[in-house]
Length: 309
Image (cartoon, rainbow, N blue to C red; front, side, top):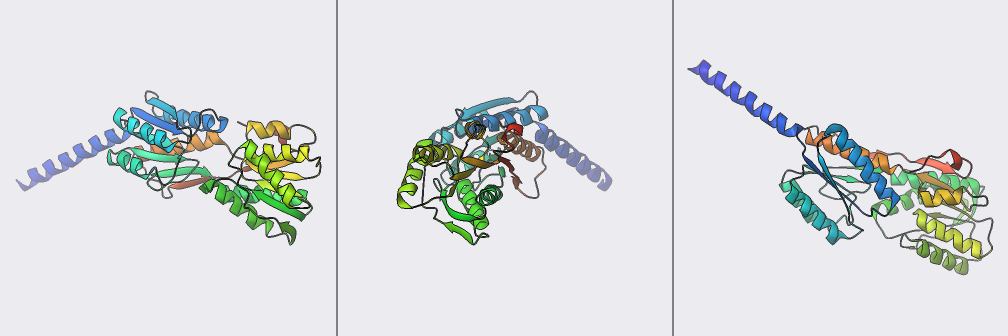
């Protein structure tokens, strides 16, 4: 009788294990919510995520939506994903604090949720470019192009984690150059071209001379260059982060004042994030839930070799 009970228990355990394993392997639906499908960066994130999902689960239905930087819209999208019965959600988070209740609802249904490009509490894992390293890399090149001296400002944006960390990396790098005079960071351009232009105009009015600026986002960098050109400045130098089509077009032209950018690969960010999510769905939790990707330096000298996104 004891032997029979042991055999029965062993058989039951094997059955449970096989059922759990089968469930872990199954993924019928995936929801992707990115911040703006009108932006090439987020289009590439979404394409990378879909490629990773389809590689692992060719028959999985992939639903891709644009949150348009609207947290209310993104929360509704997450709730729709939950109702659709997805097993995995990939997000570029619109608001890292306000998203928390929606993430909790998804996880309560056993859904794996991973972040692509930014962090938020409640995510199972996140893949993003190392923003501190990006700021360092961009400002190291800027400092070299300035000969290690001059008056340098930072054109910042809203205090989102990626922007704050880019700024942190830059200030750490510029601190290595005693002959660089730092003009401050209180210059929020709102991540827009017009904002970057207005901030740069303000800097040129406030300071007798500005030799260079690190701009945390490239649309603002394009606007900052426009302001400098309108002011008749030809020697000022800008650096930034992303490697977007907008800035690579500018850098490809003779006389570009944007001399360097620390390029990301949004396709890789999306692909790595979704692949990490698939691993978790399959029962393989990562030792480190935050995976950082290193940026690549692109300069006006190497721009024609850069493939971009």
